[in-house]
Amino acid sequence: MARMMRLVILLLAIAPSFAADVDTGASTFNLWTQAAIQQREAVLMKTIAPDHSSRETLADYGDHRFRLLYRDASGFPEQHDRIVDVVMVHSGEGSLMLGGTMSGKKGSAATGEYLGTSLTGGELHPLAAGDILHIPAGIPHSFLVPAGKHITYVLLKFPAKGN
Image (cartoon, rainbow, N blue to C red; front, side, top):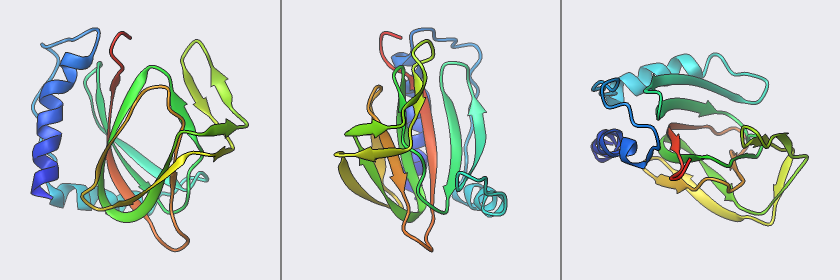
């Protein structure tokens, strides 16, 4: 877990270099310890939304943000045409369906944000605590959680290069 926290700090330091509009004066140092994430996870698991998730924004720096998500079941597929996701699995288990065809795709070309009802034909990647993954902009993806299980992860979102 210490390795994951060092990566979070490193990503916080380098993420602005990937952004189109860097505001170097607005960023501040933050450290989310394993204990702090566990405390927040305990709160999130008590406030599950109908989409089987609970989330909290840990920090929003304008050009990138950190979120904490807890899922107790599979989520709807999503696609962000202008945003890169970096996921650091904190606890639990599940899989990531990456790529393929999104059915029931709804959203806006203006924002480049889409949700769907299902995802077929993608690659399935098992996930466990300590795993770190990079989801490029424009790739449909969905987190799958086995019945009776959960997955908690820190999500770093930043603009794709050129956006």
